[in-house]
Image 1: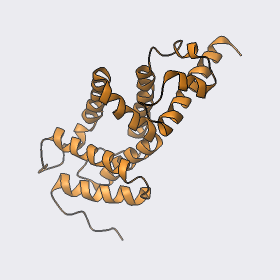
Image 2: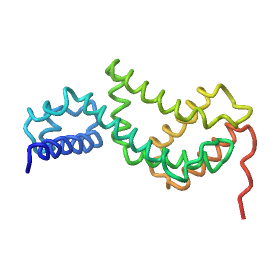
Image 3: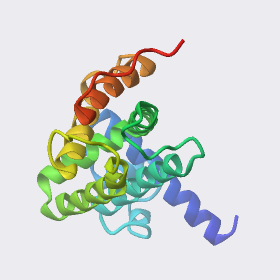
Length: 195
């Protein structure tokens, strides 16, 4: 195996080990030595790829951003939140990304609690995500608050439900959140079911 391939393999092993440990122990209770042991790598190998546990977490955050970008680039993506199908698409995409990265999402929040630097990193990420959605409200009339506050409330609702209602079937969660979000954003009843 070539050196570059070995390095990529080690980096991937460290990332996967961190995800497993964050899921079982939490971010705060996971040490770098735990990650290297779980990955079957030497403790020093970690520092060939990351300067800190926070930098590893930033790599995981980049994975979430990439997954979100893939959803936004999909042909079925709609960007008009006056259309319930557009809201449904975004709710489903968020729900799927959150479920696929649940341990990382929890780790991000834990890291932000103990590190002001990481809290700023997470805040910038969230701001970018909200900025990407701002144009989705152009055709929405009678927003309950400013576009920024309305989107923040929507994302917070989905995020909170994804954390506490994890056992709910995905299709049911998406439908409930879509209906609620449509009514909240558009200040009108959800359209009748299609035949």
